Image 1 (spheres, rainbow, N blue to C red):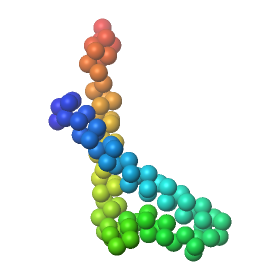
Image 2 (cartoon, helix red, strand yellow):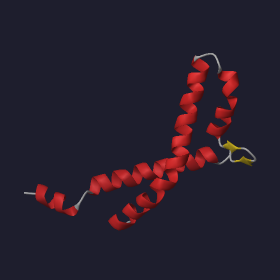
Image 3 (cartoon, rainbow, N blue to C red):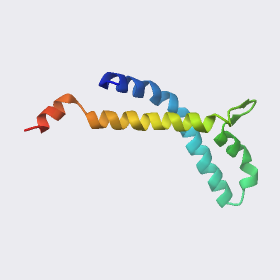
Length: 95
């Protein structure tokens, strides 16, 4: 995969993955806070959202895998972009 393809994949996937990652992060933190305050049973609906159950749409079987695969792809493409860096910077560092 060349430099342009890595950047395009990262640029395409980042906005798509932002929503499920933020949803997972927010619902997980809020549910843990509710448990710490002794109100966990009142906020079980947060746990359902966290696991991928969105009303009549039940993605509990695939949501964690898609979330993880998207995050892993973003991490790998981000590291590749960082590692390869801009060509001009790499050339200026060489003696």
